[in-house]
Amino acid sequence: MTWPTIPKDNATRSAANLTDAVRAQFNWEDARDMLDGLPNGGLNIAHEALDRHVTAGHGDQVAIRWISKDGDRQDLTYAGLCADAARFANVLSEHGLKPGARVYSLLGRVPELYAAALGTLKAGMTFTPLFAAFGPEPIKSRMEIGEGNVLVTTESLYRKKVAGWRNDIGSLKLVLILSDGPMPENCVALRPAMDAAEDRFETAQTKDDDIALIHFTSGTTGKPKGAVHVHGAVVAHAATGRFALDLKPGDIYWCTADPGWVTGTSYGIIAPLVNRVTMIVDEAEFDLDRWYGILQDEAVQVWYTAPTAIRMLMRAGKDAAKPYDFSNLRFLASVGEPLNPEGVVWSRDVFGKPFHDNWWQTETGGIMIANTPEMDIQPGSMGKPLPGIEAGIVNTENGAVRECKPGEIGELALRPGWPSMMRAYLNEQARYDKCFVGGWYLSGDLAMRDKDGYFWFVGRADDLIKSSGHLIGPFEVESALIEHDAIAEAAVIGLPDETAGEVVTAYVALNPGFEPSEALERDIRGLARKRLGAAVAPREIIFRKQLPKTRSGKIMRRLLKARELGLPEGDISTLEADEK
Ligand code: ATP
Ligand code: MG
Image 1 (spheres, helix red, strand yellow):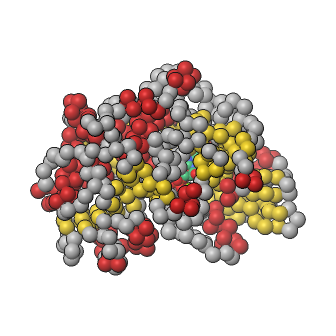
Image 2 (cartoon, rainbow, N blue to C red):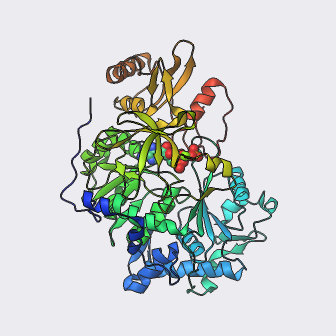
Image 3 (cartoon, helix red, strand yellow):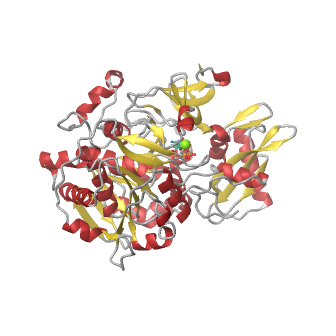
């Protein structure tokens, strides 16, 4: 079965109107016109996200509608968030911190997290958000690598995850605690300090190349890297938010990613605020009825989420969505993992709009390849490079770079030069240098470009399977498997085999109402053979209640393989609890 093209939605005009002519004329220098700029000509993310909107008279617009775990709503206006960011910046300065200091957060999605992020940037300091569900060791090691000076967290997170090692980190001077509970020794209560601070702060005169953020990668393929990003990246956040997410001032927008991952910062804080939308921030974790309820009750217009969540919605079936009204939704986008074509088609049935897949990485700082509103969607494709992005498929055998022909699989590469590109891997110069060959940045992902210029994800370079002379990408096999009614999620790896080199092995998690059985396995294998051919179809199907994933929702194929082969598990600091 091939997936039919989904024609572009002519009923909704996009903010950017990316016609071929607009694409051809685009350059990053002109894109700065979307922004204000500092008096000295430099850029500061907080200035673009907050200050300039308040100055322009939009202070009363809601910037964040926050929904607490209990379902209470709290609105924060642009003026209110700007004042809170200023208070946070003042608290930092009052404690003697200077521009360049490194501020870490370890918080759930609470309003203070957003004030801390923007306040840190306003003060010209570097912000590093950590995911609150990390254990003590991953927090400590990230703090150590980044030589953090400040940590903002809650009393209970501090007690459970920080107190035990705090004194081992010499750089850590200030711990700000958000809570009403007893204040741990040597810590400062955040809320009272903010309440006492001035609500104005002159935004630091940062330059484009000044460091703004350090973001750790998801750790899917190995030890997480700390990608260093600069204030000038905001040009890319502004443009890509408009091009790939269709953000318009005043939109109601919901990004479900946590700021502990780059999506939750680039598109959960910066791009939406720079584009002056109203963001929904939900403190709680995924819950089907809660999510459908938010889309309906908050009248969400633009929604940015991830395949792992989409597959959970699909698992519950279309009927679960029936009671809800999604008529306000205008644009749906997905990132983080390959989006199976079935998910695209499913979403059009359920929401009346298809998901638009887009691709990028922590390193690229912003969206690089996307299905934009002006394009017909080929379900299963990541789309085409955004304006200002030159992407290629390359082969780097023997140190030489060769561009691949349409249809040929190679490594997805980008020509450096867009504003949100990382400037370093923290303390890992050699690892960083290895990413650049022959004028290209190598992404570590394998992909294919078709004759029409659409890019198709194949798999991580490390996950490619070589079986009886065939090169097999896990994504293709996984997408075929989840077409089976019984299968909710699939992860495919290659295991060593004397004759074939490697054999394709699939791990699958089943939908409710299905139990593992030999008959089911036969049936799945039959479908896979029909869809993929005998050479590519998995030889073995292994049933699992759940698949090992990073906390950002990415399937860890390397871990399945290591466990299968009895090899060391490697860095699993970002692993969600799973069954072995
Ligand atoms: P690490 O680099 O530490 O192994 P990671 O690569 O998973 O972790 P991120 O930067 O969070 O860390 O994720 C980026 C990766 O996610 C991409 O390189 C790609 O493999 C995958 N990805 C993101 N979006 C898509 C997409 N639309 N389709 C396919 N894969 C995607
Ligand atoms: Mg990566």
